Image (cartoon, rainbow, N blue to C red):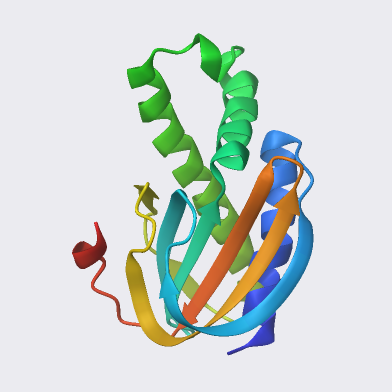
Amino acid sequence: MDPKVILAFVATSIRVVKELSGLELYRNKIAIKRVKKIHKPVAVVIEFHEDVRGCIIYEFDKGLAVKIVDNMVKEVYGKSVSELTNEEFKEIFDSAIGELANQISGNATTELYNEGIKIRISPPLVFVNKIDTLISHKQYVEANLDTVYGGMTISILFDEFLDLESIK
């Protein structure tokens, strides 16, 4: 488990969430854990390959995810998510939260590339209300970030060759 990889994803998450939504994330703790399940109602999984293999999982409390997407929608469309129909909200929500995770991962991998670590990422897979879905029995690193709207968890599983079709 390369600490550079972990710290790049955490630092980039804090920066990108602030850039895209104006929200401040505060790092709470980083720990090594075992048996990864999805614990929050909104999760995005991105696999990575090349010099480092595995996947990263971004999880959001519902309030935080809605607030981030609301701020992103206001920036792009000039209106609040409360002004959208349920169908529009669902479509935009999945797309926006996936794009957020994609931008975090893309920025982190660019930083790592500049430090000599090559990582390619897969397209994001968004999971809503898949709490307790088992991802892995192996060891992983987890970072918890907090805001006034709820928390975000970043889990990094190294050397995983996941069959993501089984958790869709």
